[in-house]
Length: 249
Ligand SMILES: [Fe+2]
Image (cartoon, rainbow, N blue to C red):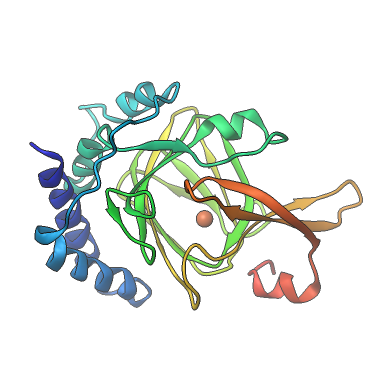
């Protein structure tokens, strides 16, 4: 099967999964987006990468996630089928970052600025998180939907200990600016993500939260580079207003 046919399968099955969720109005924008993708997919021209960077461990993790014994949806199968033909990259750049995070957060775009189909108002792709990775508390202006293809993921939408355990076939929606953190188990986790703009255009602002020794919270601002990786550009103390806007309480 060629890459265009694989992509068409992904769009079709994603559309079908979202159509099953008509009782969740918060997913309406995602359903509308996939209605449009489905209508346009036949005439899209693909931007197939000429040279793809080889990332250590990527194929090992993807093969682990592609266990034929897993019970999985048509959508998970379609996304895994296309996963090895895409342009993967490490999402973080920066000298002072935890190596476990830099090496453990891998992404690829299907729709996006470096995607198979160029788009600046939709990011849709795959996200692979290595085993035993904790992706710290963060927030972004974009509205985010995850679909778990393989593995387990703990997602917490606040700083308290409670979290949701996601597994293959689960969706998770993160509203604009809501703080959240992610944690994998001893297995890699393969997700599909969709980012839609909130009020402004994508990518919008993304912040990571940190608490210092004196229990004061601050946040660092990440800027998206032209190659879609992220780097830190600013830091600020978190005010009462920010706490309230971020779903902290
Ligand atoms: Fe997020």
